[in-house]
Length: 258
Image (cartoon, rainbow, N blue to C red; front, side, top):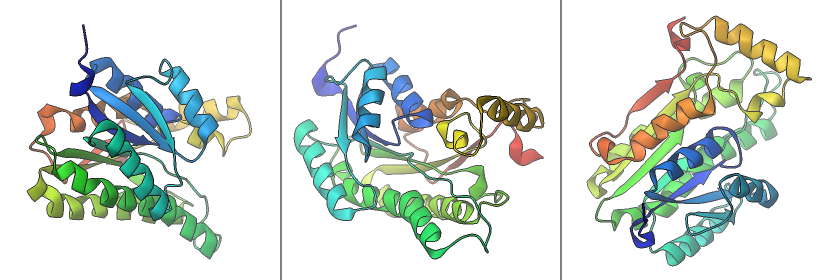
C-alpha cells in the first residue's frame, strides 16, 4: 500500500526507547497512518529505538529533550510543529518508579517522581494543546498512569501518589480541552514486562520468578506484555475513540479484582 506522507498523523511518544513506549511505536507503525516522534533525554536510547523501528525515516524521528524543562519542551514542540506542520497525538509514557515508604522518601526523591511522572505530562500537554486545537480532526492525548494510581503499591509512596495525580490531571484537562476537540484518556497498566522491573531484581532468573509468581495470582494467570497496553493506546488514538474522553482504562489482567 502506498502511503501519502502528507496524510500521516504526527504522534509524539515519550519513553519510547523501550517497553510500552517502543511497543506502542511498533503497533502504530503497523497501521501506516502515523508518523512517530520519539521524545526523550537519552539520545543513544532513542537512536537504538529508532533502529528497532527500521531506522530514522519519514515515519520515525527522534528529538532529545529534558521532559522536566518547560523551556526545552516549548522549543522542541515548536520545532516538531514547524517540521511536520502540526501534531495529532501525544502519548505520555515516560516515568520512573522510586521505591520507598514515607520514611524512605526524601524530598529529592519526591520532587523527581513528581517532575517526571506528573510535571512532564502537564508541560507537554500545555505545549501541544494549541497546535492540536487547530487540527480539523482535533487531537488525541493518552497518559500512561498505573493501577498504583488506583490501589497504591506497597513501598512505592511517591510513585503511587504521582500516578494518582496523573489520573486526575487527565480528567481535569479532558473537561477543559474537550471544547477544542482534544480527547485525553488515561491507561492504568498493572504489572507489565518492562525494563522498569529489571532495576529492582539482581538477576534474570529472579525477575522471571517475580513475573511468574505475581502473574500467577491474577485472574488471567500472567503479567502483561507491552503489546497488551500498546493496543489500548492505539484505540484511544484511533477514529473509533473520537467520542471517548476522560476515561480511565485499566489493563491489568484482573489485578484490581484481587
